[in-house]
Length: 137
Image 1 (cartoon, rainbow, N blue to C red):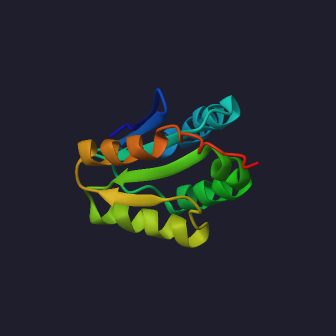
Image 2 (cartoon, rainbow, N blue to C red; image 1 turned 135 degrees about the horizontal axis):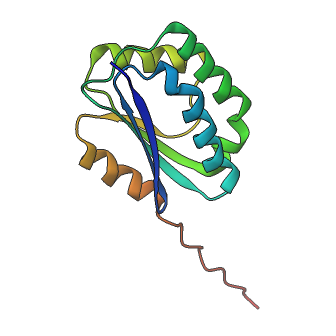
């Protein structure tokens, strides 16, 4: 089964959807996600593995961890948090393997439903209002 990885920016939220056996689409996904970082706009991310997503190879886990390490500083500055929807225990194991190789230094959580994940990240992505300062004379 061919797979694909879609990257869709919806305002301040980036939704990444993994479908089928996506190993062959992985490098294109990293290039597209790099464009998100290069844009320099803060965002929160939702990573959705569709029920038909297949377990990626060990090589993909290593490549993802390498990319995360290379882009760590930029990701920490721009990404306010990440939500993961992982219906498969194998995909949850894949996430744990990647995080062991390269820890996530941003708020993150795993959700069962996409709407719950979207609500959580929209709260993270909301602009922070500056606190007014007062001068005393």
